[in-house]
Image (tube, rainbow, N blue to C red):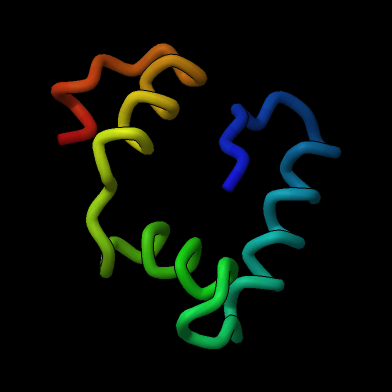
Length: 64
């Protein structure tokens, strides 16, 4: 999963396309795992929290 801020119309379109791809993702695949995380069915791991915190400049306590 690559997380980056949406800063333009192009970024927004790409994000929507990615969500469409994940919508019907099968379980136990990378896409399925990503969909579960985005859907809050799977909790973020420590490494994921660190990466999101650094990439988006979000305090870690907000993500826990």
